[in-house]
Length: 270
Image (cartoon, rainbow, N blue to C red; front, side, top):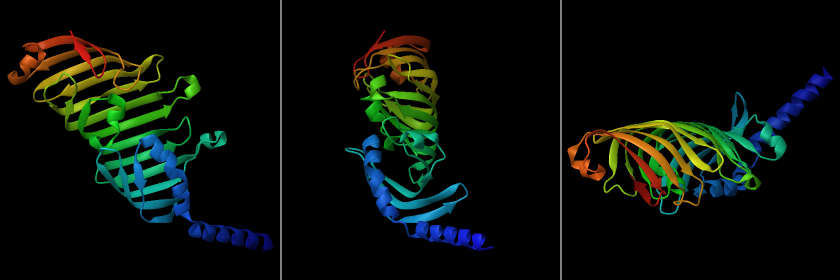
């Protein structure tokens, strides 16, 4: 009986310590690596403890994140708790995150450290708030995005870069790229991106675009290199659906196919 009282007192004490823990200092401790990984400046509002079924955590409200020359991202609520992950044993903290914002929602596990990454899902996220320009140089994407993501960074001694996959489903947006005089609207843009192959920045898998002006399927790869200078090796099969853009594709109508080489900044169509 005495032992049960002692255990109960210990648990009660731990609970009150948890409630009174300075979570704002904990958030401040981990903000710098998050800002470095996302190239964003992040400011947070209230930080309060919260007990969940899978463990204690805390809720951050009124998060404001900005990138240089990028839009302001407002997050209404962000719940964070330590994730059940073996990465803690290697010195890489892992946190379960669940966020809701006007720009979309996301849930998954964020791992910090030199091989950090994210595994989870995005739902209804505005593509403009994502650091797409850091990966695709002068390409610009707009629309709403759902995605299943499992990505982590490769250690520098192993060549750096990303390893993993992204399966995406974007809708009601547009795509602009060097060589296109106008942004092409699309109704859906789906497919997969595979990272980690030696000498390849990303391989495209079953990428398909459906839009009022153009329908296309894309396969191939973007090679490794500095941003914008990654070599292209793509095969694009397309169907022009609007005669006003036919001249952009050599005047062709119906089903056609082109190969794209060059680089992301200077693509060569043949």
